[in-house]
Image 1 (spheres, rainbow, N blue to C red):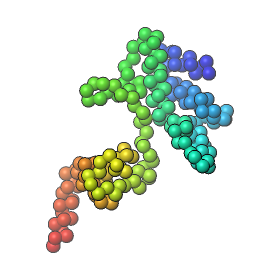
Image 2 (cartoon, helix red, strand yellow):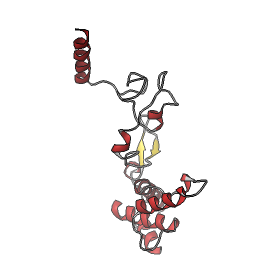
Image 3 (spheres, rainbow, N blue to C red):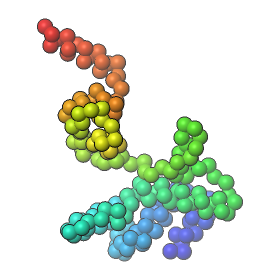
Image 4 (cartoon, one colour):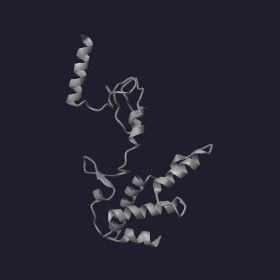
Length: 175
């Protein structure tokens, strides 16, 4: 563990070294077997184990590798600031909002694999507000959504080409 901590104290550690050290730290915290070196694999094994229980607690699962990486970057930045080594926050797990304020990057990974994302759609009847399944999944509504068909407050703006194709389809249906 000391070797892992040393990486966070080293002002010239690379992002890859920090990512690997962070993953090892999370594997230790979440009591992964000694032969497990991949946080996502351990997360999956922990999920399978917890899913057999009557009351499963998803919040007790280890973070994904992507989330652990961003968290490790923020830890590294904090330690370097304590050591009076000034680094740019937006290179170490933080992003800037439109107003210049910092907010943590939770992960750079997609919210789910593309095959699953393509299966998510809502059945909203009014506007696709806070209760919209697509919005809750961090996605915009699409043309496969049950009622809104992407014509709602959570729809992606139509590209000019799509708009032209839609107009052509409508005109051909009128004939």
